[in-house]
Amino acid sequence: MASTQENDDKKPETTITLKSSDGEVFEVPESAAELSFTIKNMVEDGRAGDVISLEQVDGKTLSWVVTYLKKRAVDTFSEKDKEEFDTEFFSDKDVNSLFDIGNAANYLNIKELLDMSITKIVNLRRM
Image (cartoon, rainbow, N blue to C red; front, side, top):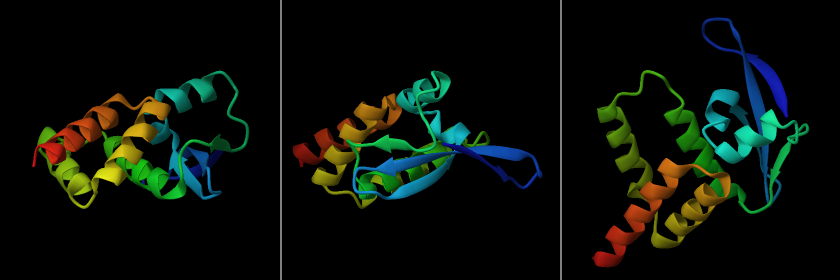
């Protein structure tokens, strides 16, 4: 589950290992992974084990979620940067991908990502 990597400041950073339903494995900084309340609770309760298996999220969707979490975990992320990232992040997603992201965000309890994916779906449906 957790391993240690060094960041630019040479301080060890704990990583969480996530495994998708189709077997893809992702190493995610703990600070990013814990933006998911589901993952955070699993880690805090000691239920995570060496690898956190996310049986309801496929690899493609989990890669999008991991990208989102890593970016959102950056402390120096201004509101303007967030808006620009969100626009870019969702720009190439079709409605099925947005549903997949929304379902994953719901399962992983990532409220902001869930809200944004729902908003994007509604906006696409209005077109």
